[in-house]
Length: 468
Image (cartoon, rainbow, N blue to C red; front, side):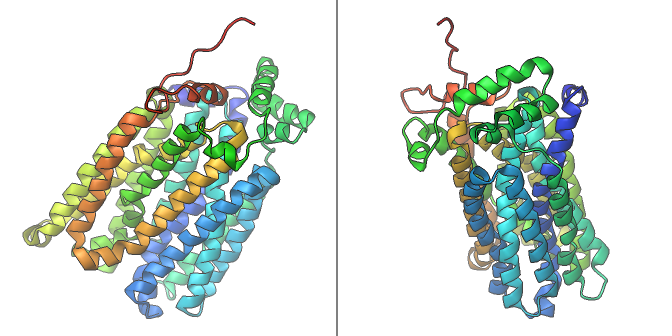
């Protein structure tokens, strides 16, 4: 496999190690996404949590993540990608301990908000940091390590949920074990170099060259320094983010962010055992069967990581979105038929598993990869922050309303509503999302300034000027 061969060659091995450590920020996101699905089944009885309070426990992390992502944009530009991630690890440890020791629902909600600050911050900074270290021919796979770690964290959480389901105070242990990845992220990032792009922005040229000498072949360093300097010549502001030249990129980034959540992915993750319980399985069996969903998520993501730089972003995005729509329709059909629920509850597991597989090869990795690619360096921090905030805000809106929708319009209708959002997403992606495979971040920036008459982001690079 080309990606694996290239990743293990020369200086690339060091870059792979750096990317894996930084991607632990994604693991934090994944672990908390997955662990709450099992913990809810037990804490709702232990703490007497109502449906609204259960949604608040889930939603508190998401609100915190919105705030964390907002702060991360400023912090990543001011203090650097590495140091911002270290602080996120410390905050995560505090939040995980607070969840484990919470005496009541109110305290648990507050602790989940603190966790969200760390998760939102790390989910924004990790893809940016990795994209700025990665060589262009490996960037797709390496940035997708973040998504790989997200799904690894989800699977790890499902395994923890399964292992602890018969232990006293099971939900406290489930949430408290989150301290472990927080410690690994904090300690791991202390040994990482700073982003060379950020160092050059700060005028620390010698340090930037020293980092590039460790992660690039000798003959590539000078060219990359010049590329970065050209794109970082001007300091960006929010006015630049909203300027007409950047607007097509911003529209694409925000659409990817919002549609990723409007198709309901994290309701499936947060409430997978609850959905399976509604399909007729007992709580312990639902936790066990959710393991299959987590394994599928991981395997499909590995496939995407290996092939994204060979096949391209658009094919995975379009096929994955179409598959999600079909799976959501299947789930709606299952929950609309009483006879199917009585005789074929395995269809719910099939629908959930297929949905997760298609998401894991499409919107899962492609969103985080593309927002790290499509924005010019001078506005990358602010623009990525805007997209990450939009993603978390949409995540909150969908997750906080899932149980309300189920009780209000029905399970089948809820899944069909998400399917309709998926159809809109597919149409937009087909029309507006460009291909960024085999293009450096600076080439993407130059190509993005070329628009057609409808203001769309061009799919092909703008012609490179030659001569003087």
